[in-house]
Each structure stands twice: as C-alpha cells, then as structure tokens.
Length: 398
Image 1: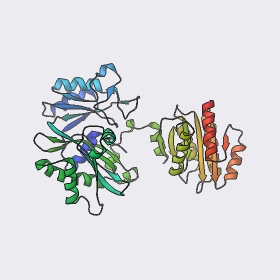
Image 2: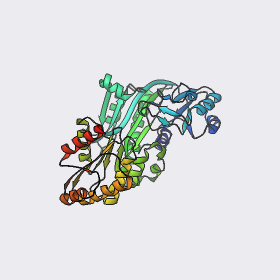
Image 3: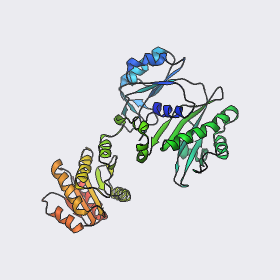
Image 4: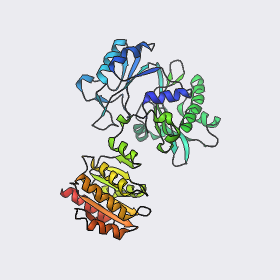
C-alpha cells in the first residue's frame, strides 16, 4: 500500500525526522487558511498523487497552467491561484502514463533555502537478503536516469537486521552522501530515525528524494514516499487509515476484497492463474508469442468456484481485454472446481471475447469433461505453450 507525501512526512515526524511544516488541503477554499498557518515568504504548492515526477509533470487542462505539479508561491495570492488551477485537474507524469491522475488534494508546505539535493532510500536488498540504504549525491533527479547514465554515483549500504544501524553504517552513509560538519551530525541521527520507521512500520520502501542540505547546513526531508507490506498491515491500523482508494485501480480494490492477487497491466490478454510463479510464466509466454498481458491475477491455491468466478468478472471489467487465458495447475485447488467457476462466470458475464482454458493436475479429466459438455464457446488447450499460441491467435484473429 502506498500513501501520500504529506502522510509519509507525518509518519516520519512522529519518529523525529526533520520535515517542514505543511498543511494538506482538499479544496481551493482551504488554500488561504493553509497559507496563513505557515510563515512564508515562500510556500510550496504540491500535488498529492501516488506517482513520481510531479514537478516535471504537466496538467492536461489548459486552465491548470504550464508550471507542473509542484509550484513555488511567493505570496498568499499565488498559493490561492495555484491551488485553484491544480485541484480537480489531471496531472500527467512519466509514472502515471498518458492517462494521468486527477489531483484531489494538495500539500501547502513551508519553503526552504536549498544548498544541496541528495537521494536516500531504504528497501530490502534481495541480493543480500538484508535491509539497505541506497544513497546518491544526485538528488532531485529521476534515480532511474542516474542509474542508467552514472551508476557509480549510486551506492548501496546493507544493514545487518540484528545489529541495526551501527556507527559504521551511519558513517558509511554520510560518506556516500558527502556530508560534513553539522549536516553529517544530522545525517547520522537521520539514518537511525529512518531505519526505525522503516522496520517498525513494516515498509517495503522509504524514499527521500530530495534530502536537502539547507543554507544553514541542516538536513531536511523535502519529499518522502512510502510503501508498506500488505501482509503486515493488520498490525498497523493507523497506516490502514491513510489508504486513499481514489489512487487505486477499482479492479484491484475489488480483488483485494476477494483476497485475490490482482495487478492491472496494459495489455490485451486477461490472465487467471493459480500461483505467482505460474502467473509470471504465463505472462512471459504471452509476450513471447507477440501479445501483452492485461493483468497479473493469482487466485491462490485454495480458491472455490465463487472466488474463481469473481476473478473472472474482475478481469472482464477491463475494456482493453480482447481475450482470456485461464491456466490452472490443480493441487489443493481441483480442476473440476475451476471449470465450474469459469463456466459460472462465462454465463453471468455473457462473455464476448475468446477464452482459452488449460487445466492440469487434480481431477483434470473431470474438469475437461465439464468444459467440453458445457455447450459454451471455450477453447481447450493441452499445455501452456499450446494455450498461449491459441489465445494469441484468437485475439489477433478477432
């Protein structure tokens, strides 16, 4: 689960991180009061969407102006006019795709005198199996661009989860960021604050970009992004309250209510599979034969017919879907149960796109018999390769 910048900063502030004062607003009428709560003379008006690149983004609507999704305001009047332009309009960034995202809230923040911009994040390093800081002196830029053009400027510092952030780790991090004097003292303290927040709140990722050194040599978290481990959210009701469903795909929200692992993609072939590894292989082979998957959908190992039917209906809600591939290896989940769920969904949705079903495993013959005797237009497949070729051919033929 992701949260907004202003929420992430509130979380970090609880742990003692240096963040600026700010006020979140949800209507243009709140802009003046928000500006009055901050000292000025510089305010920053920030679009709050779950996507990076807001500063370089562009609004679709002409009335939103040409200044992007993060704007400097040098008067209260500027704050008010920018808020009116930005709220309710659609911001397009390199992470939103061409459709963009509607800006439903803003964060009005106290400005800062910036001397240096740095990059800092915390994540789980899969190579070492440990948490790690990722640091760079190239803050304020797209880290992907830095990684491609100057990878030597990105340093990874792993953290022993038993020892935590030791003096050696903190010093190495400050070296990587080029911090000296007062900024270095702040950096050592901040390293421990961020790690404590990261671990105690079960985060998947904590990114500060930029982390700034101000003219007074103090550090400040100028931007913050957080994502949380969904499997641990039951331990954090305070974080769950921060969820903004308007930033999520409606299909993904419905899938979560059925305990389905569903991620919307941009292709044309809907996939319903049991098991994450098999789902990945299914998407790969669809790409191999020249099409793109429309989703990742793992119904899990113990789904019943009702859950399978729900997954099928969710996939069908995507207007980009031109065909569906069901690929099931029955273990705990029996193939006849899958067949019944699929046929139930086909009948209820009046399916009008090609459907290929590949079944293998427990009760496979019974499952195939159910599909064969259904009288419905379902294309059977013998194996995954056969299934992928058939659904791609059917979609291209359609």
